[in-house]
Length: 461
Image 1 (cartoon, rainbow, N blue to C red):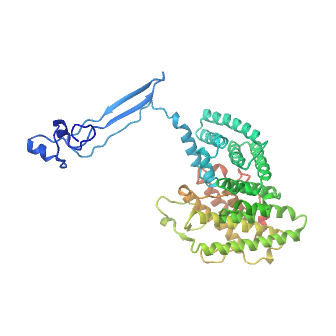
Image 2: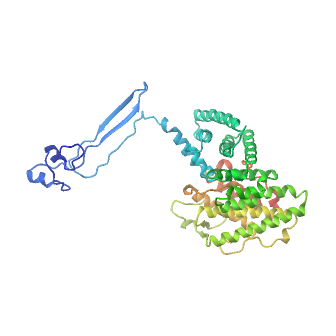
């Protein structure tokens, strides 16, 4: 409508003359017939930027783009004013940096992101924020942000201590986050304190308490953590009870990863019991080996042709591998999850075979039932090699993955022990860690949760 602001679609010349435009493009024919120069149809662009002066007053700057005499495209350069403060975005930046760490993102998917969004309560949000500040401040050498995280950490610990007087199942979420915070800070004593709290809270709750989302995903992360600690200390874990393997998933889907963890949580108790009743524990090991083989057959049925080999030159655009590799080709999977499941299966297999070999039963074992990804039978040592090759695939594809991975370096530590006599693999494993900035600080010799343990694996031939 002519004369109504924002209503007319006519050219600039007809709008100024307050007459109806025929809207012919690129130039109005009515202007041409009347002898006027048509100024086109693009309207002025009004850009307003706001900044905050030191006296607290809001300063507004208006920049108007001049009307153009033609409708052709022009580049417009917009510059962020130096006085624009990013303080309002500080929390978002810190949380984004935390979630960009693929080790934590895959280990905590999806409950960490829900914590950052404040959807799991105030204490989980505070615990998540202090972790984000600790990680961001440490990486970027921002001591003031580290200090803010430390203060918030103390507040979260005090609140958690108060809630521990009457613990509920949902308390495992902030405990996990505070444990991760202490581990990132290198505070082993605090990390052990939180691990102890995790044990007590889960034991105080019934297994069915975790049979709801997203709490179940946090329980799965906690279970993998407690299993790893039990494996290293060779101490039986209460999670080996059948109720802890069934009730949390009674109305929910259990992933293949967690089916493997059901088998693996028996291993620490078997290690502890071997000194008391060897024959009894060997029966358990053979039973677990059979359960593992049934899992393998189901997996191979669901995942036919799951992997193939690619020459490094044939990798997708933007993907490359280092020069310290043992194999000339890269093992490539259809999905990130398949690689994760193969890694965990081989880890469970090697643990069971290692304990049977330690009992002097290595010669009696059948050929290792390893997943035959390339249509060929494999040995126990080749199972360790599969872990390395699948881990390489994970590193190449984790940036685009939103899938869960309950274990990162534990499987690689297991493979490292099995292959330690071959210096080529030791060099390659170290190079896999070094290639990732996110994993570099967890390298061989620096993480007690991955390397330097599992002597029983040395019995595997």
